[in-house]
Structures are given as structure tokens and as C-alpha cells.
Length: 376
Image 1 (cartoon, rainbow, N blue to C red):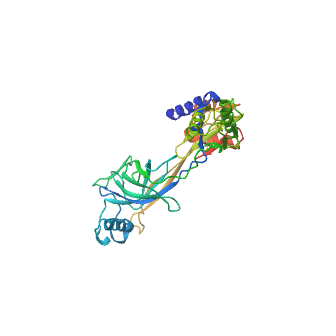
Image 2 (image 1 turned 90 degrees about the vertical axis):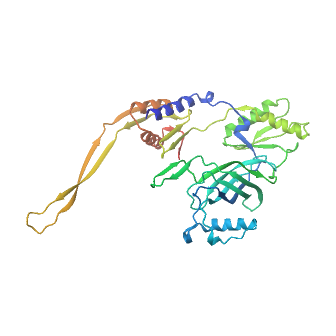
Image 3 (image 1 turned 120 degrees about the vertical axis):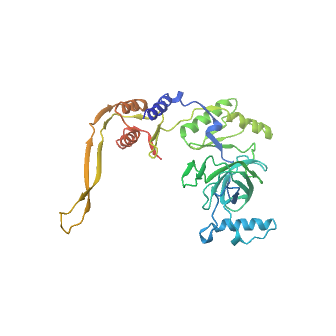
């Protein structure tokens, strides 16, 4: 409880400084380019070198496509093997997913994700064999291969005890893929403006970005304009025609500082009991009352014996006992409170993380929470 409230207080204090807490960010960190494409890739491959934790191949209950894949692979090396005689647990069929890197060129390396497709129990210490990567329409873009890192383990002892850390059926191959073809992109042209896409669309932030760029080149006519909440269009200054000059201009506006306008949000994860609130979240006048009702039901067996020399039978009858405990309620009136003030009040009232989540939801329903409530 103390640790939870410490992080809650820390988030509130860091966020309560408004614009000073919202440190200026580089334009390149809050935007991306509209003419830059990232192609989603997928492939089917095999992970080998597993210590008996791969896919099963026992009768009709096994992973048939893994055995067929191994047999087809061996044929490529001139070995003909009947798939019915393959009994290996050191290989697993996997799906490989990735996305082409921004500004990627042939030879650029990037990471890929590897996920088990069959009934393997772990991909730990496995090696991904050469796997072609294709787009949604079947275009070939690259190859993936290399050792799989899972960051965990899943071990079963001889006595049946299982030891598990993290999730061992999904892994990653760092720099395991190489791009084999160009990704279609639009080159910089002097007469074609550059369009910046905001990662978090917002009219205020778009206007600030355009104003910052125009102030940077105040010696010429305004170069930037916000088309809407998500697009800022930037024209090149007159006189720039060489590719190097265009790149230098784009690089100069990337490093300009802008204060991003952040929407007031309260994010709640009910599964973990986590509450994260920004500093620009305010709370109107509201009454918060807290009380808890606990109902504890226990069942104990009661053995009923028949009378001596009777024809009755001994039976067991369950006896149920119910205890109801109600904690005294507390009430606190909050008026124009900040997140920091609310967290202090809830701490004084002895709220637990689950109670804090319920309070935020109730305050939102009451119309006193001036923020968007996001429940994960």
C-alpha cells in the first residue's frame, strides 16, 4: 500500500507543474513524416536446437505441419525422409512478424518477433532458420535468421514440478532480419512541401509546431501551416534545390523545441490496480464517502449419528455460518482539488488501490472529473 501511494504521489507531483512539467520536446519526437511507409511483414519458419521442448509428432495428436516442414526442408538439401518416421522434439513451427524500418534500404537490419504456432513448451535457446518475410499482398521484402531471445524459461522437473519465469513461447531476434528491397518512399523535392504527422493529433500542438517553424525562418514568408489537428505542412525556403540543402533544412526543423499540449487523462488498469493521472487533471467540488461491507461465509461438516439399534445411517450435513462486518464510513468534501490533493485525502481515509479505482470512476460519473477516463 505504501509503495503504491508513493508512486501515485510521485506521478501527481511530477504532473502538477503544468507547462513546466511538460518539458519542450523536439519536433521529431512528436511527429513523423507522411511520405514514410513501414510495411508490415510476416513469415513462416522453424526454430531448431530446442532441448526437447519443441512441437510433438506422435500420431494424429502431433503438430503435423512441423513434421512436414522439416521433411520439405531436408529435401532442399538432397535428403528424402518419410515424414511418418520423424520423431523430433527439438524443432518448433513459428510465425515471424516485423515491420520494415523507416528509411530502410537494402542491407538494413531490423528486429523480428517469433511466436510458437504449434504445441511447443518453450523456445528457449532456439535458433530461427532462414525465413522469407513477405507483405500482406505477398511481396518479398527480406530474410530473417538467428538465435531467439525469450528472456525467460519454462522447466518441468522429473517430479512434475514446473518452474516458469516470463513467457517462453514468444521471443525476439535482435537484428535478425535484413531488408532485401527498397521500401517505396517519396523523395524530397524543392517544390513539394513536407507533411508532418502528429503522433498525438491536437489542434493546439499543430498550431504551436507551425508557429515554431515560422519563427525559426522569420526572414522569409511563413513556411508552415497547420492543415488540421494531425498534419502540419512545411514548404522549403526559396533557393534550395540541392538534395543536401533539402536534407539540412529538414534536419534543422526536426531539432526545434515545442511544448506539446497534453489531454487531461486518467488511465486505470483494473487487473493490476494501477492508476496514472496527469498533472493537468482537476477535480470539481465533490463529496467522497468510504465504507466497506465484508461478508464471510464458512461451511463446516456436521456428522449426524442414528439412534442406537435403529436402521438409520450416519450422514454428514453441512452447516453454514455467515458473519457480516461493516466498517464505519468516512466522508471528505473536496473542492477544486488537484490529483495531489485527492491522493492525500484518499491516503488519509485508508483507501486501497481497488478503492481508488472505484472512486475515480464514481467521480467521473458525477461529472466532477475534468479529464478523460481510460480503463485498460
